[in-house]
Image (cartoon, rainbow, N blue to C red; front, side, top):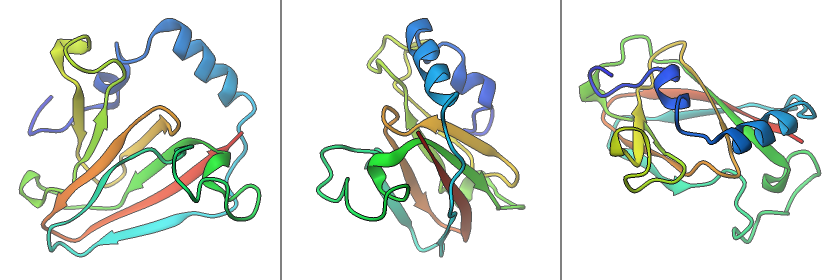
Length: 149
């Protein structure tokens, strides 16, 4: 880990138990590609996105919309970052809460921050992984796709 960023290897190792990994792998076998992508831009004025699940059954709008595009259909979130000159001072990291947080995780961490560097692709189970975008102090771009099961 350097400059507050985490590699995909650091995030994945030790953060998911064997049974959860097997369950997720089985779900991924039936996952379908998305029909649409979302392009998000944060203008650099300290904008952020609060902690949330992308498929949250407690959200009142969870089942609203066209089948295949509803939050309840999502199984995996994929985010591709498009920020070629990202620096730590720019902020806008993706904070990912590790399963079982509160000291029982790798190195006692309950979360990791992922830098939104150009070309970085982040994938996670959107039913289980609580995440947020920290305040961004520079223009920040991300393309998101939700795969369905």
